[in-house]
Image (tube, rainbow, N blue to C red):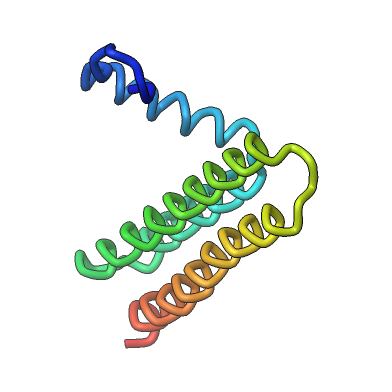
Length: 124
């Protein structure tokens, strides 16, 4: 819904289609989304190879989803900042750096969780 507009929210189906459109746009335009999707696919393939148990699968899938979601949010933040501040501004740069740092911290933690999950599956 557009602020100040009297129009109703789009239907559930249209909202779902907008979400898919946003995901496809991010995949086509953002390198980091492609990297994270590839890492997620790699984790899933490795999960099949080592024979993860159901709880480990749940952990791996949630971690993949959380990192990809965080990167999508980071992309949305950066796109919004570019819209409202097309010229470089130190505060805009700071906001973009902080949003990217949030994804980085999450990725490091997910990497540690991945090592624990896969080491457990391989060695124990």
